[in-house]
Length: 67
Image (cartoon, rainbow, N blue to C red; front, top):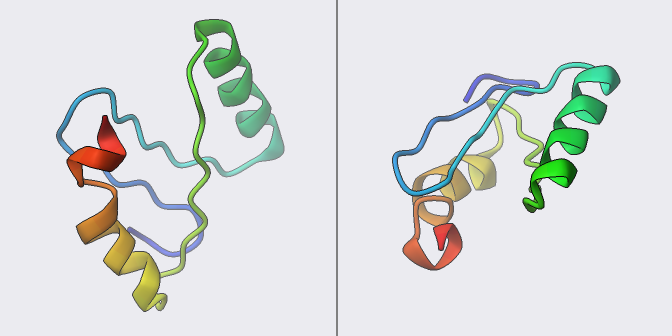
């Protein structure tokens, strides 16, 4: 991920990570999810964040998290 709101694409069922850079984009994405009845997860990250990198590598792809 890039610093300050980058996105990561992880192969697997129903994962759609997108970069959100403005409040208007966030509102639109939340509205889409609400209309589709889908949950939303916000991931705040930074290039220097070791825990963020570990979450990207080990947590997000975990089948228990994805499913």
